[in-house]
Amino acid sequence: MSLAIHKTLAFIVLILLGFLLKRKITTKEQLGGIKSIILSVALPATIFIALLKIDIKPALIFLPIIALFVNVVMLGAARLVLPFFSFSNDSPEFRTLALLLPSLAPGLSCFPFLAEYWGEESLAHAALADVGNKVFVLILLYLLAMHWYYQLLRKRNRANTADGKSRLKSLMASLGREPVNLVMVFAIILLCFGQNLSALPIFLQDSIVRMSALMTPLILLFIGLAVKVKRTEMIHILRLLVARSGFAFLLSAVLVAFIPATVPLALVLVAVAFPQSACSFWPFAHMTAIETLEKNEPQRTFNLDLALNVLAFSLPFSTVVILAICSFGNFFASPTYLLMIGALMIVGSALSYVASKSKTTEKSKRKESISLSVKEVMS
Image 1 (cartoon, helix red, strand yellow):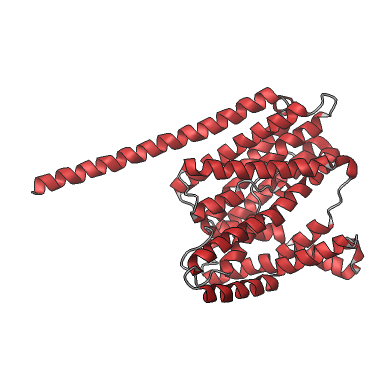
Image 2 (cartoon, rainbow, N blue to C red):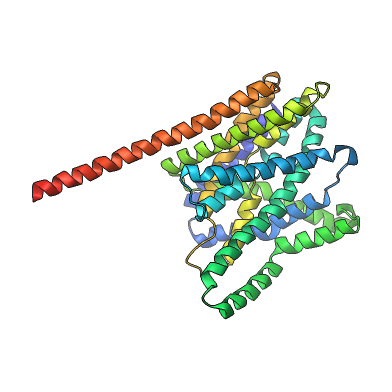
């Protein structure tokens, strides 16, 4: 068994371990403590390291730009397609999925397989492309999440301008106290002066790296602890993940079609495997930060339970797809086959949803006819 599969199985075991620990960690306070460690310690350290590691080589500047383009196109596609799956444009579920589905977590689901199957060069190219993805998930998605929060805030307070202003001041103060925001500002200041992680004292570097090491195991345990499995929701999430994967294959087909024939197969497969990465945890962190601002609000911007379920199913799903890509590289290097696979996945997901919707409609009609016949008999 390859090292990449061992790593993936280790990630899945951590999620299952968290799921089994539900009996031990039963209260919201205990779960909230783990979430606080992630958001206040592990996540800021990880973001700080990720930002300070950004080193764009001029010759390969197109890689992060293409990755950012893929993210933006997937965001636009998600916002167009989600209403088809009965998610209203103004619902917390729509905003949650629109934030999660375009995000990518290649470090968890893509990098291990690229390194194992295609070597360090493909991993280096994927890591450079991830710079564009990091800009998207850390900055653009955060701004989008805050935009949605402000929209709801204005709707809640449009009848009371004074109250709205006081809430806005409170919001800005809360944002200034968030460790993630403080870390991002500090990292950007260091980057502006041409500094990186090595500019800090060694003891501080070591502390930050060790705090960052908590990130992956704590996130996976937290997903297992917090996930709430419902059969109908699980099927619906899998449909969305299949449609997401199909659209990513279509994008890869376009990219591969423009790649010169002289480019090595390893680099071609980066363009195929990278967009298939699992959904990122960072949009969930943005949603959680906003939820802390909505403690006393009856209407929430996001649905965190749905977000956790998507994260829980996204990792194993993406792992299977990327494993197939790496195992049958020549097949997935063909734009024609990529188009066919992408179209089949999207059509299959849509037909499955239409069939389930028609069954639900038939069941509701039967219930209505039964209730009407019972009323007639009673009368």
